Length: 242
Image (tube, rainbow, N blue to C red; front, side):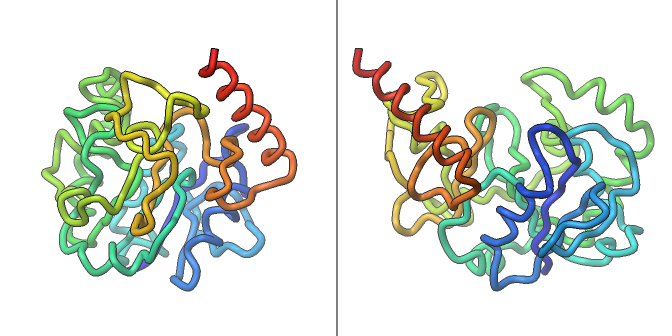
């Protein structure tokens, strides 16, 4: 099983972000599927198509990819924080697995996926039959992006059922009213503040990115982001106190 991320370069996501997440995967073998020609310290494999944004993740299902095609994959979004032992996910994953809905409860979330070889051809062929049609149709809260497409055509296992209380969402489980990015409508009311000691992964979906939070349990990204995050966190706390 190979640990993998996807990076299509943009203003928001750069090779530095790939380096940041792949440091968290040690000691497991990992690779980044990307349009970057080279990323220092990170093994890479080429994106072969020009699908926009998160739709690049569908290339993980290409059974003919020269590097990844015959590999079982454990995929992570670049903006997750690893807080525990990934071996536990590897031990539990037996068939195609996604997260149960985080932002959209009627569909699965693709921030973390186990993609076995045997499902790749089915998903890839369905998508490649008419990529633009699928991208156009998956543009509503009921069917959003790549995860809406995957939820529509598959019946994945769900990580939270395999590993209860081990995978968390920053917005849903952790953010407190005084913390950056807190949204009352998305919070489940637990307001944990920090990941529990037995947490394996914390998912950040939407605003804020983990490196912009100023939180001590988020791995260091850069001096600039650390200072900016601490200032934003202080402002959020001050605003909540009013």
